[in-house]
Length: 181
Image 1 (cartoon, rainbow, N blue to C red):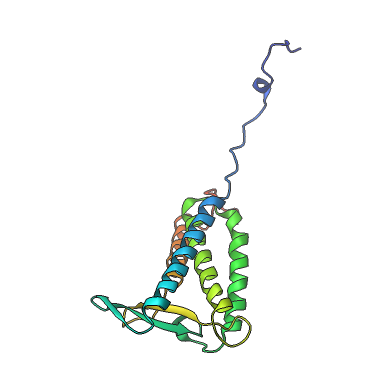
Image 2: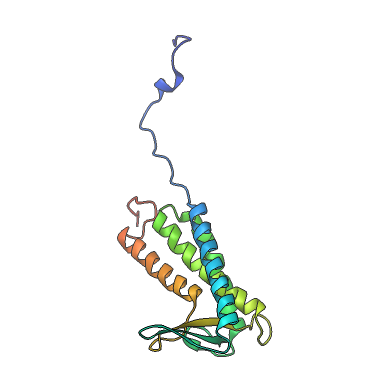
């Protein structure tokens, strides 16, 4: 029989389960918002400033305005709608994957890819082009030995590499627990 002043939590039996890690939505969405803002601001700047000139920065880096109606590296020219639909699927998958982003590195990686994908989707949806989601993506970072790209493209590449690195480092397990394959 228990005394009335006893602590009920002292009667637990068995080990206490560790707390379940939570998704890092604020970090993921904050990174995505920062990428989106930087991407759209730099594209606005490029359209305003680079319309009639090219700016040499350092070595082979220059700012040179181009409009890309294809996919990465200007492949699939004129297939903007198909590329945009594929990007929409990727965005949906990233949002669904976000709930598993319990590590900061994973949340940052998904946020980078998500923000970059949305940035380029905005161009496809609202810039001049042919048909549904056929607008051109503003590219302006020109290394002269690599295809011209933008902040969104750079974020997508860095995010994908970071995601691969975090998955490799942790054996594909987001929670840090051994996989039960």
